[in-house]
Image (tube, rainbow, N blue to C red; front, side, top):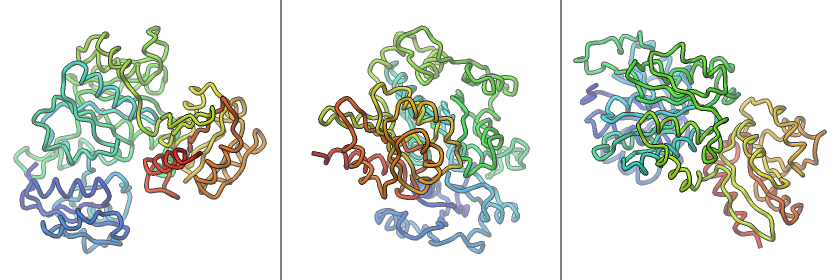
Amino acid sequence: MDIAGKKVTIIGGKRSGMALARLVTELKGSARISERDGEDGFSRDFKDWAARNNVAIEYNGHTRDFIEHSDLVVLSPGVRIDASPVQWAKSEDILVLGEIEFAAQFCARPIIAVTGSNGKTTVSTLITEILRRAGYNPRLCGNVGLPFSDFVLRLKEVDYVVLEVSSFQLESLLDPSSKFRLAEASDPLHVDGFQPYVAVILNLNDNHLDRHRDREEYFNAKKRIFQNQDSDDHIVLNGDQPQIKELSRQTRSRAAYFSAQSRDPLIKNPNYAAAFEVGKILNISAQTCREAFVEFKGVEHRLEKVRRLHGVDYINDSKATTAQAALWALENIDQPILMICGGRDKNIDFSVLAEPVQQRVKKMFVIGEARAKIRQAFDDLISLEECEGLEEAVQKATRNASEGDCVLLSPMCASFDMFRDFEERGRVFKDIVNRLK
């Protein structure tokens, strides 16, 4: 692909949109951004950079006039593929790519791509640590908050790109039958399909059903991670989930399986097992993988211990935006739990948590838009109290906690009703906890 001189319209701002604008400009394309919201999503430094580089920004968009007459439209991950701007572009026969596939056109290093409902960040980070331990120089990016577009032209010293990818990023991949995929390689807008050397599918649970019509559509988006792989590539699948294990029949790549039933004490859960399997594919010794596991300190906002105060542990699990992710937390904490949860509902069934909540949670403190739904799910099982915000929830949980208890933020919901993202929610929680006396 050669976008020099091409008019490239980026739909959606925020981190990915700004990274895309920088990449397009560096590739000598003409970048412009259409942002649905106002100016707050852009830093002052970026707005100054955009003005210097003639990058137009449409605030409170998206208008058809701004999008038409583009040579290429690139979507930030938050933009739905059925959104009006996407449909307008396609009606004009304009090429539409997602951020991951666009950046991959310029990636000169093998990609290890990790997806799944839960555990993506942990496994991506574990793989990165294994590679470092083995003497390689990896670059971790993608859905971990580090846009692929920011790094793709700076991989000269990098051996592998470890890419966390979400269903939002995968659903926008071009079909192999697209005319832009079938175009001659010499065509400036020829698209090479997103083709990771190693693809990993960790698990499949109900998630993002506020975005996808149903579980099947969500699963089909996840499956696109291997649609362009061939016999030289690898797919790592969860052998404990039959629906995922059977995907090996649909892929041309070489399949390997991981399981939580490993007898190795250092492979203490499915996340470690998946990373270990990737290490084997890359011919990294079992000993090196184990050493990386021993040194692994965990991931921020995922079962992150904030502090112990008066014998009470405070744990930040803000990344747990689904019931299954919260279940993981409940199953891995041995203490009585004061649980803080709530936020924006993702159309998730909370009933899967009924038994573990009843067994492990002393009291629940609920915040955000999903308060009524969570109360309906658990009110008959445990003591539950609604709170106006996170600070009130932490204060009340602290007053109800006894020595030996754990105050756990594990929201089961998205953060966007009260916070910019789950990272901000986690940081605010840690700040509140660290101010406790």
